[in-house]
Amino acid sequence: MNNQFFGAALVAFSLSVTASDDPIDCDQAMTTIEVSYCAMIDLERAEIELAKYLNASNQHYADDFELIDAIASSQEQWKAYREAHCNAVFTKWRDGSIRSNMAILCKARLTQQRTHELWESFLTYIDITPPVLPEPPK
Image (cartoon, rainbow, N blue to C red; front, side, top):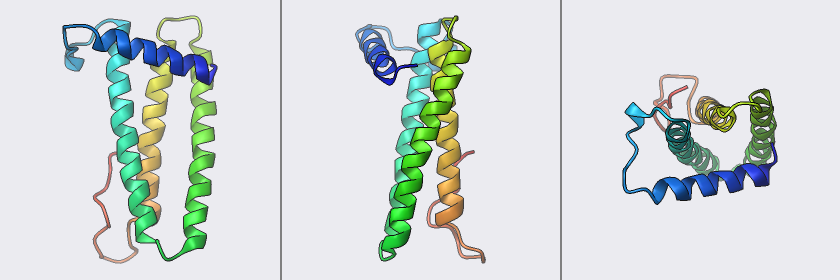
């Protein structure tokens, strides 16, 4: 899946959905467009949560420049992995109208997992000290 194509498709999709007068009830989403729209909302929320935990990790170790660089490097490599993996998922479903939705769901799931990994690796302690932020969903 070409990233530019996927991004352009999502922008066009978002504009078409937001231009509608009827809000989409994600609990009642039925069509591919509605389900994809709701999946995009979930992905956006997951990415906001990831940014929160990534920023907290960086702030928590602000004096350890080597660790900050290592976290940044791992984040860039993780982004490349997420893109490659979810592109493969898109390819798996390439002949169906569900392909974009499956790729979006893949990105949301991996983003939630990454958020949890950041929390576990950088925002918790090995003793009974409370974590810097609450445990995010897996």
